Amino acid sequence: MPRLARGSSPTEWSVSPPSPTESGAIAPEAADGDRGHWAGPIGARDARVAHLARTILNPGWLSGALLLIRARESNDIRRTIQVLNRVEAPDLGVMEAREREERAAGQ
Image (cartoon, helix red, strand yellow):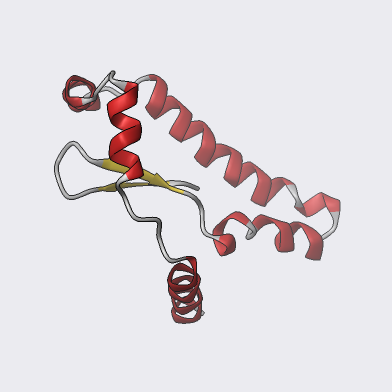
């Protein structure tokens, strides 16, 4: 499931994609068992997604923080593109190495 991570300032947040081990965890569970056992892993995943959806639709006390974030956002698309173009692209080799290390540490 995607993770919400805080950046260098209180208004900088990012959603990281699920890791390959996380996103693919349900497939081996389903493949190893018969169809009668699929309801457990799939139901658990559905419950987590439903909880995330409820939080997004009804943020509760997070509403204030979301309003603050929205107030700091820019509607100037041209400026946003210029800022993003100045950011150096990540080294995919380094990112893959980190992912492998994290996977090895988790095993």
